[in-house]
Image (cartoon, rainbow, N blue to C red; front, top):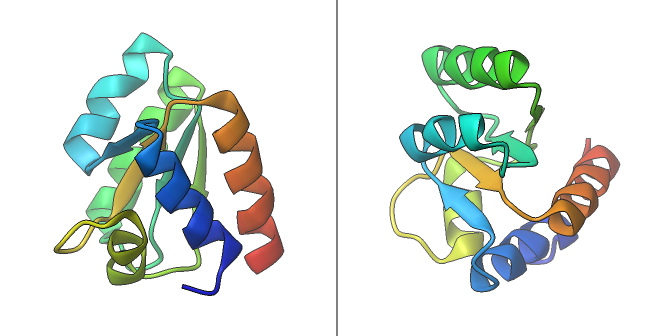
Length: 104
């Protein structure tokens, strides 16, 4: 794992500031405690549309990570593919956003 973005996702998970999975992420948006939503580059069209529409509605920033779901799930220590994540800490959210822009 030689990428700062993936390393920061792992730290975010260890700190307990990460919501994992599309359903949990979309359910967390109305509470206004999610500051950033990240979806992977290989997320399905339906997943991408669902996440972006909900984020627009609840005015939450949403970014597409330049990594596959397997790379992201490996970085956070989950087995299986993880397509979407919600960040519940403002500092982690801003750092991940800037790192994602560097990787694009």
